[in-house]
Image (cartoon, rainbow, N blue to C red; front, side, top):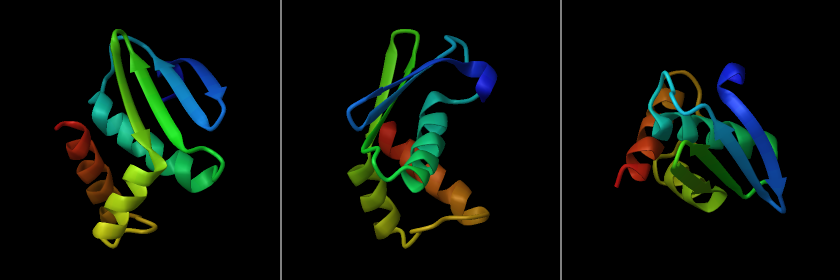
Length: 94
């Protein structure tokens, strides 16, 4: 992941991550996984914004927590982790 990051910016309670234009993984999946981890580790951050090329994907803590609560995945691990990431990525897809 580190080699994909071009820059990080913290503005207020939002973390913006600028990524390389070409990603080896789906940007929605990467955003979902990043948001889950960031929100778990840094309670002060309320929004994660991933920027790659001209695309910008944003997830709020509220969106992620609401989905995780609805799926009873408060602290996902193992298969639950993959399921949580897939659910949130699907939310971003439409």
